[in-house]
Length: 68
Image 1 (tube, helix red, strand yellow):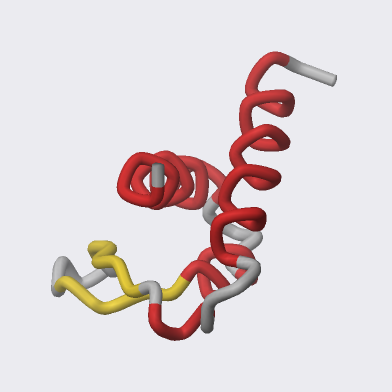
Image 2 (cartoon, helix red, strand yellow; image 1 turned 120 degrees about the vertical axis):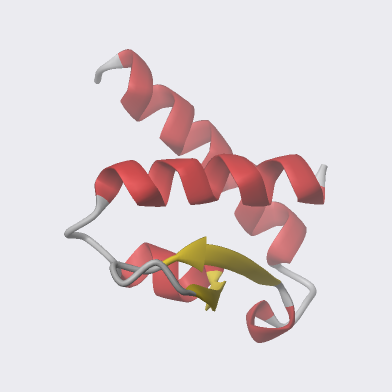
């Protein structure tokens, strides 16, 4: 496992433990879409976005930062 893989794993565990008792749809964050508009994106949407791992990582860091 690479270093970034470990970081993602740890963040996943932290985020999921924080989200567990809440409705995931209530946790909203903003992410810039391809046409540069800012769209509300949920954690679940980020996890479903396999095509953009870089964006997913940034989003996880942001979510993690706000939930700590």
